[in-house]
Image (cartoon, rainbow, N blue to C red; front, top):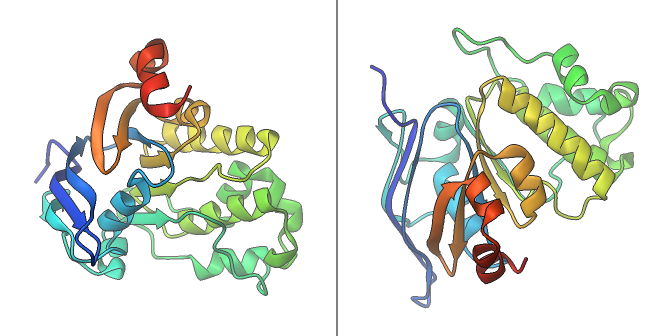
Length: 239
């Protein structure tokens, strides 16, 4: 059965043990193949939102559905099996394993009707990794490690990827390379939910944007509208 939205999030709330609200009633929805940017300052609630979707944050109030299935409170591994994969903030590689071994760790069976990710496809997307295939991941640069993190995720043949601050701490030239790779994924129809502080990076990847401040959505609309609204950017994104 086809569903209009691939993701719906209804009235999501998350409290700290001390009762402070981290998420304050988030409502979001998007279609299959959508490219969504969640923007906001540090501590705004972006990472908590993504972790709530992927099952890494527990005790979330409200409802999260994926492809018509309720996943609120589901375990991270069960959500991954549905095709929803979280690329967390920071490089998460196995430093003692080679690039190829890291890719093999992430391998999952193909999904029906979709082209499976292979080493060859990975190296087409991230050509910088090809000559490093036999190198230990701990000896890669920060940008190369971030690319490897994403590449390993793709080896799981995801349908939707949640990217948490993928451009953080990277040199501008590496950020541009990463944006080019995500645009290629975008063209292939992968659903993307991107958490970012870097507006310029988000613009390169996302079609729609949501600004989150203090756990609440303050703006939802097309990225082009956000780019054109200087007052909005100044108010919430310090630009």
